[in-house]
Image (cartoon, rainbow, N blue to C red; front, side):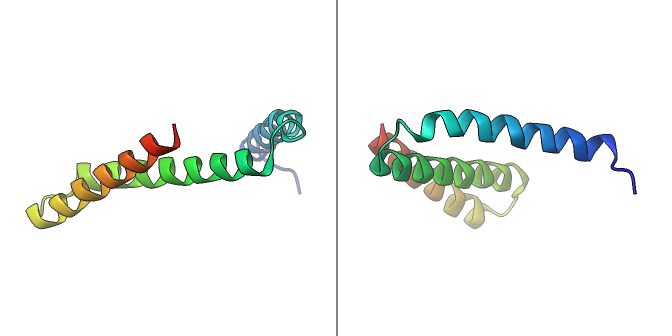
Amino acid sequence: MARGWESKAVEAQIEIAETRLGSNKAQRTPVELEKSRLRESLLMSRHRVLQDLQQSTNPRYRKMLNDALAHLEAKLAQLD
């Protein structure tokens, strides 16, 4: 079964990312890797909160999301 162009594009992106990460892995310490993973996780959470905030109309839920966003941004600031 032939693969579509989307599968090939995704595969190419994965290979590029692995190549980029592979060259940096040898130079980074375990502490730096953990810090990088934590930062990526916080950024993904922040992105999700921002998306939810854009779609939310409930004032109480919006307040909760704004509080969560402030918390995530504070954590990100601590990492830098």
